[in-house]
Image 1 (cartoon, one colour):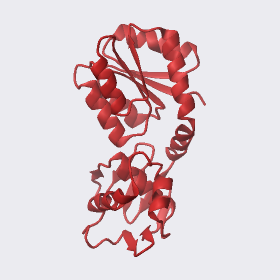
Image 2: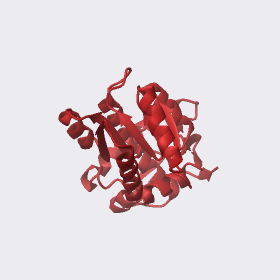
Image 3: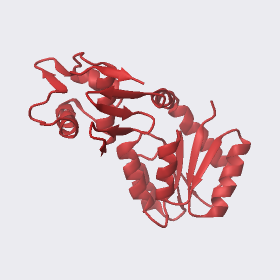
Image 4: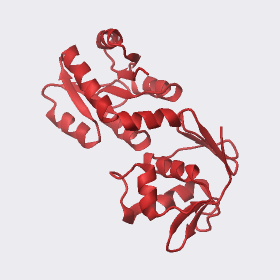
Length: 236
């Protein structure tokens, strides 16, 4: 299946140039001219990689990179000016997978895209499997395609990347005790969560889905063993 690239840049000439070149090389391409438009595309389609300009009219590119990393696990290649070394460094520190300086070679950009896609192939395949599914439990519904959690009363509940990954791990193994090591492995968040902070992440997730976080009825503790989801899960 062809990879889907989202180009986010406020310069229409650059958007058109990159789109046409990548389409010629058998990649699916969507474009956005600002952060708000980017969010619309991400909410409606499966995107495998974001090419992100750091200078956008409505929102700073570094801020966008930060919130993408907090909520989604999509590779990011940042676009930046040759002299903006600080921005490049900050972008990489925020979790960007690579950067390309303007003006850039289309051939080099394509090579970098392919390299990032190769490195993230396993995660990309897993993410595409998840997007075809939704989980329902105790009146809640988690749409893994849009990464949206809906409460029993219809409210949309925001989840961080860590909270989302942990919830998916529980939903894949309901009513089964998961140790901290298993949660780390299942959630694929070794870089973001350490064993000593799993308890903190569980508490934060409980605060969002439990009526009383200090008296949990969904995510239960099995002393000396780990945690389990005490609910029937329906996959749709």
